[in-house]
Length: 249
Image (tube, rainbow, N blue to C red; front, side):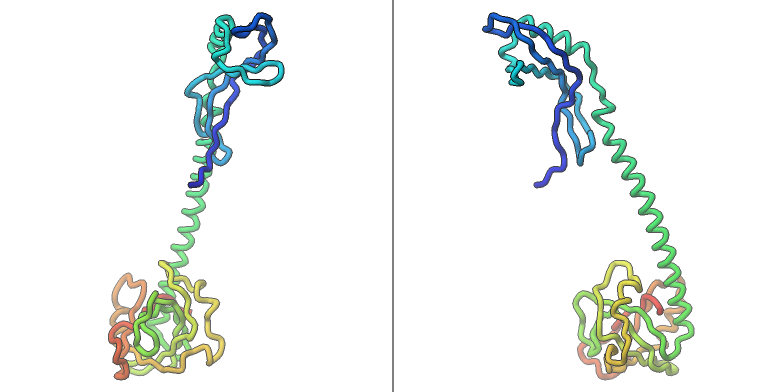
Protein backbone atom coordinates (compact mmCIF):
# COMPACT_ATOMS: atom_id res chain seq x y z
CA UNK A 1 0.00 0.00 0.00
CA UNK A 2 1.30 3.46 -0.90
CA UNK A 3 0.87 6.34 1.55
CA UNK A 4 1.14 9.94 0.44
CA UNK A 5 1.28 11.48 3.90
CA UNK A 6 4.19 12.12 6.26
CA UNK A 7 4.40 12.78 9.98
CA UNK A 8 6.55 15.60 11.31
CA UNK A 9 7.19 17.67 14.44
CA UNK A 10 5.99 21.26 14.32
CA UNK A 11 8.14 23.47 16.59
CA UNK A 12 6.03 25.59 18.91
CA UNK A 13 9.01 27.27 20.58
CA UNK A 14 12.59 26.80 21.65
CA UNK A 15 14.90 28.20 24.34
CA UNK A 16 18.31 27.56 25.85
CA UNK A 17 18.31 26.67 29.52
CA UNK A 18 20.88 25.82 32.13
CA UNK A 19 20.11 22.86 34.34
CA UNK A 20 21.35 19.77 36.09
CA UNK A 21 20.22 16.45 34.72
CA UNK A 22 19.22 13.59 36.98
CA UNK A 23 22.20 11.73 38.38
CA UNK A 24 24.50 14.58 37.30
CA UNK A 25 26.25 17.06 39.56
CA UNK A 26 27.26 19.92 37.31
CA UNK A 27 24.87 22.21 35.44
CA UNK A 28 25.08 22.38 31.65
CA UNK A 29 23.51 24.29 28.82
CA UNK A 30 20.60 22.52 27.19
CA UNK A 31 18.36 23.34 24.21
CA UNK A 32 14.69 22.90 24.99
CA UNK A 33 12.15 22.54 22.16
CA UNK A 34 8.39 22.29 22.49
CA UNK A 35 6.80 20.48 19.54
CA UNK A 36 3.50 19.03 18.44
CA UNK A 37 3.09 16.14 15.95
CA UNK A 38 1.68 17.09 12.56
CA UNK A 39 0.67 15.38 9.31
CA UNK A 40 1.33 16.44 5.72
CA UNK A 41 -0.51 15.07 2.71
CA UNK A 42 1.37 15.58 -0.56
CA UNK A 43 3.34 18.23 1.30
CA UNK A 44 0.27 20.08 2.57
CA UNK A 45 -0.31 20.36 6.35
CA UNK A 46 -3.56 18.55 7.13
CA UNK A 47 -3.52 17.74 10.82
CA UNK A 48 -1.86 17.76 14.22
CA UNK A 49 -1.77 19.86 17.36
CA UNK A 50 -3.34 17.33 19.69
CA UNK A 51 -0.51 17.29 22.22
CA UNK A 52 2.58 19.31 23.25
CA UNK A 53 5.83 17.39 23.72
CA UNK A 54 9.29 18.46 24.88
CA UNK A 55 12.57 17.74 23.16
CA UNK A 56 15.73 18.37 25.18
CA UNK A 57 19.20 18.28 23.62
CA UNK A 58 22.67 18.60 25.15
CA UNK A 59 25.57 20.58 23.69
CA UNK A 60 26.47 17.66 21.41
CA UNK A 61 22.97 17.56 19.94
CA UNK A 62 22.03 14.30 21.66
CA UNK A 63 18.37 13.86 22.59
CA UNK A 64 17.97 13.50 26.35
CA UNK A 65 15.34 10.97 27.50
CA UNK A 66 12.52 12.30 29.66
CA UNK A 67 13.60 9.84 32.34
CA UNK A 68 16.81 11.90 32.75
CA UNK A 69 14.93 15.12 33.52
CA UNK A 70 15.57 16.41 37.02
CA UNK A 71 12.64 17.84 39.04
CA UNK A 72 13.94 21.36 38.30
CA UNK A 73 14.08 20.71 34.57
CA UNK A 74 10.58 19.21 34.68
CA UNK A 75 9.28 22.42 36.22
CA UNK A 76 11.03 24.46 33.52
CA UNK A 77 9.50 22.26 30.83
CA UNK A 78 6.04 22.57 32.41
CA UNK A 79 6.27 26.37 32.51
CA UNK A 80 7.54 26.54 28.93
CA UNK A 81 4.74 24.24 27.75
CA UNK A 82 2.18 26.62 29.22
CA UNK A 83 3.74 29.61 27.51
CA UNK A 84 3.45 28.33 23.95
CA UNK A 85 0.27 27.88 21.95
CA UNK A 86 -0.64 25.55 19.11
CA UNK A 87 -1.25 27.31 15.74
CA UNK A 88 -4.05 25.10 14.51
CA UNK A 89 -4.49 27.06 11.28
CA UNK A 90 -0.88 26.43 10.28
CA UNK A 91 -1.29 22.73 11.00
CA UNK A 92 -4.58 22.33 9.14
CA UNK A 93 -4.40 24.96 6.40
CA UNK A 94 -3.66 22.28 3.81
CA UNK A 95 -7.37 21.48 3.77
CA UNK A 96 -8.01 25.01 2.52
CA UNK A 97 -5.61 24.40 -0.36
CA UNK A 98 -7.24 21.06 -1.09
CA UNK A 99 -10.65 22.73 -1.03
CA UNK A 100 -9.47 25.37 -3.52
CA UNK A 101 -8.02 22.65 -5.76
CA UNK A 102 -11.28 20.70 -5.55
CA UNK A 103 -13.37 23.78 -6.37
CA UNK A 104 -11.16 24.70 -9.33
CA UNK A 105 -11.34 21.10 -10.55
CA UNK A 106 -15.13 21.10 -10.17
CA UNK A 107 -15.44 24.33 -12.16
CA UNK A 108 -13.18 23.02 -14.94
CA UNK A 109 -15.10 19.73 -15.01
CA UNK A 110 -18.44 21.56 -15.16
CA UNK A 111 -17.23 23.73 -18.05
CA UNK A 112 -15.81 20.74 -19.91
CA UNK A 113 -18.96 18.69 -19.29
CA UNK A 114 -21.13 21.59 -20.50
CA UNK A 115 -19.06 21.94 -23.66
CA UNK A 116 -19.15 18.19 -24.31
CA UNK A 117 -22.89 18.13 -23.67
CA UNK A 118 -23.49 20.99 -26.08
CA UNK A 119 -21.34 19.32 -28.74
CA UNK A 120 -23.15 16.03 -28.15
CA UNK A 121 -26.54 17.69 -28.63
CA UNK A 122 -25.30 19.33 -31.83
CA UNK A 123 -24.06 15.98 -33.11
CA UNK A 124 -27.44 14.39 -32.39
CA UNK A 125 -29.26 17.20 -34.20
CA UNK A 126 -26.92 17.00 -37.21
CA UNK A 127 -27.40 13.24 -37.38
CA UNK A 128 -31.19 13.50 -37.23
CA UNK A 129 -31.22 16.17 -39.91
CA UNK A 130 -28.94 14.16 -42.20
CA UNK A 131 -31.02 10.99 -41.79
CA UNK A 132 -34.16 12.83 -42.88
CA UNK A 133 -32.55 13.42 -46.27
CA UNK A 134 -30.46 10.33 -46.92
CA UNK A 135 -28.60 10.20 -50.20
CA UNK A 136 -25.77 8.17 -51.71
CA UNK A 137 -22.30 9.06 -50.49
CA UNK A 138 -23.25 10.01 -46.92
CA UNK A 139 -21.03 8.74 -44.09
CA UNK A 140 -22.19 7.89 -40.60
CA UNK A 141 -20.50 6.90 -37.37
CA UNK A 142 -21.99 3.70 -35.97
CA UNK A 143 -21.73 1.00 -33.34
CA UNK A 144 -21.60 -2.49 -34.82
CA UNK A 145 -23.51 -5.41 -33.27
CA UNK A 146 -22.52 -7.90 -35.97
CA UNK A 147 -19.82 -8.27 -38.55
CA UNK A 148 -20.53 -8.03 -42.29
CA UNK A 149 -21.57 -11.69 -42.33
CA UNK A 150 -24.14 -11.35 -39.57
CA UNK A 151 -22.04 -12.90 -36.79
CA UNK A 152 -22.16 -11.31 -33.34
CA UNK A 153 -19.15 -9.14 -32.44
CA UNK A 154 -17.57 -9.06 -29.00
CA UNK A 155 -17.12 -5.58 -27.55
CA UNK A 156 -19.53 -3.74 -29.90
CA UNK A 157 -16.85 -1.83 -31.86
CA UNK A 158 -17.40 1.56 -33.49
CA UNK A 159 -16.77 2.38 -37.12
CA UNK A 160 -18.11 3.97 -40.29
CA UNK A 161 -20.78 3.17 -42.87
CA UNK A 162 -21.27 4.65 -46.33
CA UNK A 163 -24.61 4.89 -48.11
CA UNK A 164 -24.18 3.48 -51.61
CA UNK A 165 -27.76 3.57 -52.83
CA UNK A 166 -31.20 4.60 -51.59
CA UNK A 167 -34.24 2.63 -52.69
CA UNK A 168 -37.88 2.98 -51.67
CA UNK A 169 -37.70 0.66 -48.66
CA UNK A 170 -34.03 -0.30 -48.70
CA UNK A 171 -30.70 1.34 -47.98
CA UNK A 172 -27.59 -0.20 -49.49
CA UNK A 173 -24.57 0.43 -47.31
CA UNK A 174 -20.96 -0.60 -46.79
CA UNK A 175 -19.12 -0.68 -43.49
CA UNK A 176 -15.52 0.30 -42.78
CA UNK A 177 -12.95 -2.47 -42.53
CA UNK A 178 -11.26 -0.81 -39.54
CA UNK A 179 -13.09 -0.43 -36.24
CA UNK A 180 -12.36 1.25 -32.92
CA UNK A 181 -13.20 0.36 -29.36
CA UNK A 182 -16.57 1.75 -28.32
CA UNK A 183 -16.84 4.21 -25.43
CA UNK A 184 -19.72 5.15 -23.15
CA UNK A 185 -20.35 8.37 -25.08
CA UNK A 186 -19.90 8.10 -28.82
CA UNK A 187 -17.68 10.81 -30.34
CA UNK A 188 -16.75 11.20 -33.97
CA UNK A 189 -13.25 12.21 -32.89
CA UNK A 190 -12.73 8.69 -31.54
CA UNK A 191 -13.16 7.16 -35.00
CA UNK A 192 -11.58 9.96 -37.04
CA UNK A 193 -8.30 8.07 -37.34
CA UNK A 194 -9.99 5.05 -38.99
CA UNK A 195 -12.10 7.00 -41.48
CA UNK A 196 -11.85 5.20 -44.84
CA UNK A 197 -9.90 7.09 -47.48
CA UNK A 198 -9.92 4.58 -50.36
CA UNK A 199 -12.28 1.91 -51.67
CA UNK A 200 -10.08 -0.78 -50.11
CA UNK A 201 -10.91 0.67 -46.68
CA UNK A 202 -14.54 -0.35 -47.15
CA UNK A 203 -15.83 -3.89 -46.78
CA UNK A 204 -16.83 -5.04 -50.30
CA UNK A 205 -20.09 -6.59 -49.06
CA UNK A 206 -23.14 -4.44 -49.79
CA UNK A 207 -25.62 -4.77 -46.93
CA UNK A 208 -29.36 -4.16 -47.24
CA UNK A 209 -30.98 -2.10 -44.49
CA UNK A 210 -34.68 -1.71 -43.67
CA UNK A 211 -35.30 1.93 -44.68
CA UNK A 212 -38.95 1.87 -43.57
CA UNK A 213 -37.97 0.97 -40.01
CA UNK A 214 -35.43 3.83 -39.93
CA UNK A 215 -38.01 6.33 -41.19
CA UNK A 216 -40.36 5.26 -38.42
CA UNK A 217 -37.65 5.77 -35.80
CA UNK A 218 -36.97 9.28 -37.12
CA UNK A 219 -40.50 10.26 -36.14
CA UNK A 220 -39.86 9.44 -32.48
CA UNK A 221 -38.88 12.36 -30.23
CA UNK A 222 -35.61 12.43 -28.30
CA UNK A 223 -33.84 9.65 -30.17
CA UNK A 224 -30.06 9.69 -29.68
CA UNK A 225 -29.24 6.78 -31.95
CA UNK A 226 -31.03 4.83 -34.65
CA UNK A 227 -30.95 1.05 -34.97
CA UNK A 228 -30.57 -0.50 -38.40
CA UNK A 229 -32.22 -3.80 -39.29
CA UNK A 230 -30.83 -6.11 -41.97
CA UNK A 231 -33.37 -7.33 -44.48
CA UNK A 232 -31.25 -9.51 -46.73
CA UNK A 233 -31.93 -13.24 -46.97
CA UNK A 234 -28.29 -14.30 -46.64
CA UNK A 235 -27.92 -13.80 -42.88
CA UNK A 236 -28.28 -17.19 -41.24
CA UNK A 237 -26.38 -16.55 -37.99
CA UNK A 238 -28.01 -13.32 -36.87
CA UNK A 239 -31.24 -11.47 -37.47
CA UNK A 240 -32.35 -8.12 -36.07
CA UNK A 241 -30.38 -4.98 -35.25
CA UNK A 242 -26.93 -5.13 -36.81
CA UNK A 243 -25.72 -1.60 -35.99
CA UNK A 244 -26.78 1.72 -34.50
CA UNK A 245 -26.14 5.08 -36.15
CA UNK A 246 -24.71 7.53 -33.60
CA UNK A 247 -23.51 10.51 -35.62
CA UNK A 248 -23.29 11.91 -39.13
CA UNK A 249 -20.19 13.07 -41.00
